[in-house]
Length: 217
Image 1 (cartoon, rainbow, N blue to C red):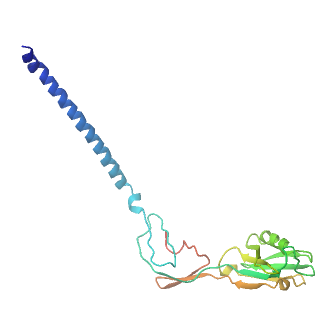
Image 2: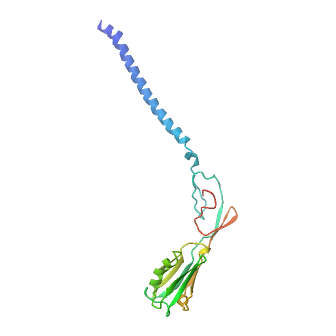
Image 3: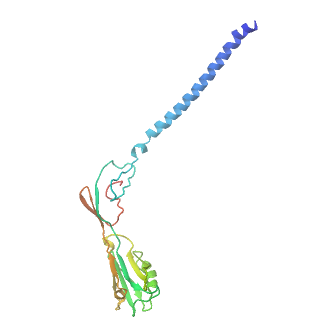
């Protein structure tokens, strides 16, 4: 009788409990799959997925970076010259505290159509001149002292801060003395623009970093 009662009353309950457990497990798995599907569809729905861009370059003339959303395209670049700064190199000196002229004078720095002047004393050293140049030219010209070795190892190196032909630098004496001549500058590197062709079209720019040629590139 006990067995008959268990079969009639307990066993159906056990089967229903097993069925409920299976349904709960299936529902949990279904919820997980739906969440995964939602995450994937959300990614596909984002326009960023389709706007992302990368670049591929053959050769070493240039490197290319592109912004999201840039039109997909192919182009050829052939670089002829790189933009460079104007660099003036003085004669050599024994120490950084050497003077370079015998009379008071004025040095004039002409760059980008502007004149900048520095008053020079007969006692001005190349180190003192180096320190004055940046401030006197509003940062358009920089100076450093280079040790090239030898009995007279020190040279004053003066450079335009920016590249490009518009930054051509001219140094002259305008105070009646010979300070510029006494420094005996040689113009080892003359300012020039970058020149290249873009799909056969000749282009020039004052910088080697160019972001105004192709939109987003």
